[in-house]
Structure formats: structure tokens, C-alpha cells
Length: 468
Ligand code: AMP
Ligand code: ZN
Image 1 (cartoon, rainbow, N blue to C red):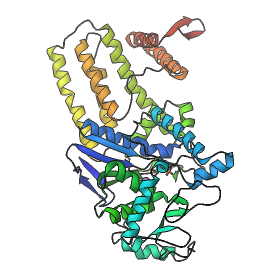
Image 2 (cartoon, rainbow, N blue to C red):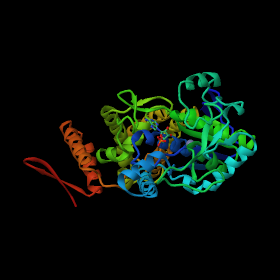
Image 3 (cartoon, rainbow, N blue to C red):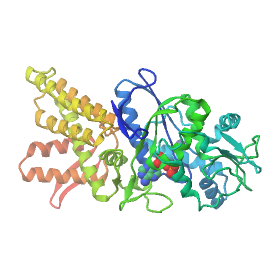
């Protein structure tokens, strides 16, 4: 399996630290509002990476945090006149709901920053002992960036260029030894949540949280660390500096970063105000459509959000769902049980689609091409199954299609009620089929609808439908 590693800027063969196991950490959201669909991109793509690794037989220990103490959370709490904890708990709950609706699996562990303060105090103390960090008068603790010789190795930045960029910026506190030094611990401000520490009553800096949570739940050395590309610098660069200065070991072997979800070719972000929440999209579309849309591009490419692309994703997904429904319907009515010789040949020949799917996914998780392989399988199924097919043949194809969809987190079995719009579309398709004298398809649609509890009535004013 090849993965693109931001560290080397190359595709590398994936070799886990421990055979058959993957330790993976993905930076999670700061919970101060509903997540937007930009935040949903890393959730969906790295959930898919996890699913594919599991399909390949790896046991994946997948850790993803919630940042539940932060300036933005505190600001929102002040606005609403409630505690920061209440804001964080509320939006964490909502975020988990969105994740479930997008069929993103819960992580093995979802640690919360506020529950890991002891680990942070410990790591900061070790860094101070080793000379990598220092407290100043007001109790702020800084990381001594220049002491970590490899600083800049992930973002491929040069320290002197960085320093030049900092020259004009006034350093707050002015007690910092160097403008490149970053905060590990900071003193509380009036009314803010705080914890006791040897340096001052205060709270952790953002970067230390992830280093500590990764170390606690996965160990000092992990296989994969992932997040959006905006996290490469400074967040991930600082995580490397903290973790490697503390342990003396390589923190993460492979660094994976997703490209931005854009709108009008600009990064979608809360601060810019150009965003849609997952909730808003969920009012208009089944969130499986959002997932399918995200996976229709390579995870490292920028992806522009638009109504047209969402519609295209919806149509594509419906083609797959229809093939699934059709198979289910044929299975129910099949008269033959066992595969014929000819069916065996057709079945064996369809291995090529699975092979293609696996090959493109093993090449740095090319989900766009994996979707193409699924479409090819769908087409193959549609041309090779009939009412005369054996149930064994149909079931095998159903489970093959289901398995590939499942790796992408696409749910083939639609147990939910059909939306009104989906019903209307199926009715339209049935009318068109009748016009073309394709009565078999027209009947099939009637049956599909009736299995979902929708009854059609042909009246003089057209087709009417009702749920029974
Ligand atoms: P945040 O809550 O801003 O820390 O973001 C949580 C995750 O979402 C991080 O991995 C970010 O890199 C990612 N992210 C935020 N905005 C976007 C976007 N427009 N496109 C892709 N990823 C994003
Ligand atoms: Zn992080």
C-alpha cells in the first residue's frame, strides 16, 4: 500500500510499526458550533482510510480528539451567558450526531482535552527538565523552538525565513526568548476555565493537547497522523517538536493531509462566513450524498462545493442504490437456487472490478477511481442479471457490491423511508419506461415502491401515490 507522506513529499510504501496493526491519530474539531462541511472532509476521508485498512486486515486503533477548551468556546459561552463546558458538551453531542449521519465510525477513543490536563502538565514538566521549555514571570510556558534541531521538517520551512516573517510582529509578554517560541501553558484570564499548575492557574496551549492525547492512547511512536492541510503549520510542526523533544523518538511515521473544501474556490471556514453546516446540507440531501461527493475527488485535491456537483453525486449514488434495490427485488422472486456454469463464469469474471478497486485504493486511497470501479461493477451487474438468475448468483453480486460500498462508508441497504422527491423521481422514471414500452422496468419500479410501502394509483389526472 502506498501513502503520500507530507514529511517526505513522496508516496511511500506503508509499513506499520507492528505487523497487522495501525495506530492512527486524526485531529478533531474545536466544538463551539455545528461543524461545517469543510470540517466534515477530514472526518469522511480518514474514516475511509481506516475502513480500507480494516478491509486489508489491519487492526486499526483510531484516536480522534475533541478540543473542548479554546478561545472560541469561551467567547461563545460569554455570548450565551452559559459555561464553556455547556457549549463544548452541546456541540460535541451535535458533532457526534452529524458523524453518525455521515456514517463516520466512532473512533476507538475520542479523548477530550479537558480530561487530559494531568498528562499535559507531565509532558510540559519533562520538556522544561530537558531544557526544551521555560516558564516566564507571568506563568506562561514556552517551547524553545530553536533547540529542536529538526523544526520545520514537516512544513519544509526554514527557521530563518520564519524568523524574518515574525520580525514585525510585536511579541506579547516580550519575555519570550525568541519570537519562534510557542505557548505550552498560559495564565487564565478573568472568568475563564482554568487548572492548577506549577507555573500558574491557567490552561494548555492547543498544540500540546494532541501530543499528549496521541501519546496516552497510542504511545510515543505512531503510524499515521492526519488532519486538514491547514494544520501542517504550525499545529503539526509543533506537535512533532513537543513529542520528539519529549521522547527522543520519531513521533509519527506518516503524515496525511486532506486538501481544502472550497466554495467559489476559497477555503470554506467559519471565520470567513462562507460555510454550510452539515446540518443545513442534511436538510436538503441524505448525508450519504455528501459523503459520496467528498469521495468523488482525491483527498489531497482541493474540492469545490457546488449544487451541480452535489446533484451529480446524488445521481451517481442513486445508480448504485437502484442496482442494489433491483438485486434485492430479483432475489426475492428468484426461482433458481444454485448458480449455473455460465453464471459461475460471469461471477468469476467480476473479480476484475474488485481488483481494480483495491489497486486504486492501495495507491494513496484514490477514492475517485474506486467509485469508477463500483460504477463499472454496477453496469456489469445490470447487464448480467435477469428474472431468470439464480438466487446464489444474485446474492453473491449483492454482497460484493455491498462490500465495496461499505469500504467507502456508503450504505447500500436503504432501510430509511424514501424521501418524497425520490418517490417522484422513480414515478417519473416509470412513466418514461412505459412510454418506451419498457414494461419490465415500469413493473420493477412499481414493485420497488410497493416494497417501501408506496402504492401507486393511475388516475385520469396522472399517477397518484400514497404511503401505506
Ligand atoms: P477546526 O475545528 O478548525 O480545528 O478544524 C477541524 C478539522 O477540519 C481540521 O482537520 C481542519 O484542517 C479541517 N478543516 C477545516 N476547514 C476545512 C476546509 N475548508 N476543508 C478541509 N478541511 C478543513
Ligand atoms: Zn491536533
